Amino acid sequence: MQSKAKTVKEYLASLPADRRKEIEAVRKVIRKHLPKGYVECMGYGMMGYAVPLKLYPPGYHGAPNTPLPYAGLAAQKNACSLYLMSVYSDKGTDTWFREAFKASGKKLDMGKSCIRFKKADDLPLDLIGQAVARYPVADYIQLYERTFLKKK
Image (cartoon, rainbow, N blue to C red; front, side):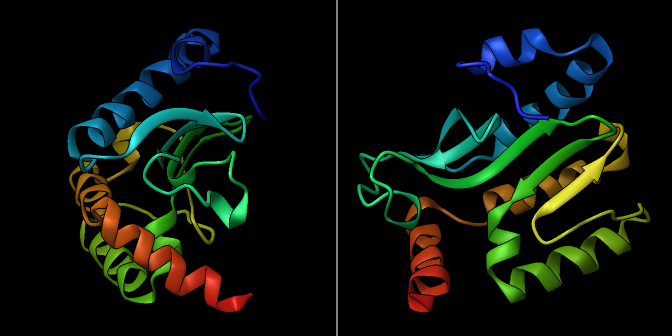
């Protein structure tokens, strides 16, 4: 379910208290570990963390009005979702992440880039922090260009 909120503050205020609590717990981890240069924003009807256009003017898939997404966080109908584009974009990072998640003893419910969870405690939050911190902006731009632009 996509939100029509224009700001993160509006988005959080629109959530039921139980969902807001879980989203805010994961948001706190993301913000603590987010490398310098990324910005918190709204995109695709959810909270996001992106490379701003001032740092990457071509934008996402050549859309000069769409910042390059790095991570996303959303309250969905039946669960919450955390999107980690660096895990999705890099096979080595994906392998590292899945192995570390398994080693944490927690159950991973993951699609390509979407990690579904009901409670923040379902996630190894230290691993989430490590995954978020893994790519400084310049490195993530290189990963994005290597992964997605070569396909065009």
